[in-house]
Image (cartoon, rainbow, N blue to C red):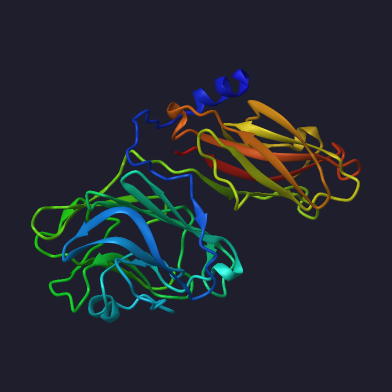
Length: 359
């Protein structure tokens, strides 16, 4: 890793954490692709340990493409909305996000095992009839605890989404909970805790929530505030308005420490061959003094990295050092492409991007 890149990133830290994570905030080793299509269940996935929960213990799970796992054997795929009555009446399950997901249209559902831990990841899977790639992860531990994670952005555009846990089998004393605002929470003797989200109401993006057995037949539920998650969000517009380039984060990577984060630079005009990525602190500087009237620079350009324009869509890569102290760093990004004749400066710029480095 380039020493200059490390020196550039360190001063940009707003909030950092060097704490060791057990389990990790997000397990990057996703394991096997279960090859699930729309409305399908992968049966009998061995955990490698006994997972205890109120009402029983299981050593294997069935995994639905629609955002939940059965604690035991059940072939119901749960299409198409999270349904509270079915959640309570059917068999035991954990739902990181039960609604209509469609891995046949993109992404995949993965399963991995580690000593005393099993991980299910819905990686880049869109909601049915939608295009936004959604990622969430469930980690099960041998002590009966588990964690849920939703990578930002995460939304349910057209279906009701249910998040929660239940022993099912006509469960009683279910507790509805606002996971975003009511934690920490102890459910006491209640083994069923859930939240229903109507369309476009999901508010748990970028969070990790943990559930631990409380010794009373229920769960102690907390948010892991030490976890900060990698994300990319766009802002502003490229220039000139009639012929800008676009900057988006790749669905196949995330700006986490120890990884290469890919961004897609799109819509470069024919004949453009050279581009440069600007990284730095966020700014809002007019580019009129260099002949780019009405254009804005969104990054201070403390670091510049060239990339090759490869036609309509190009990849610009930011290598991120594997240093925990970088977690929480905020980096502003912008692409510029040499395009003679586009304006007096011969440069076309993209919209801005805000990168939050995570773990």
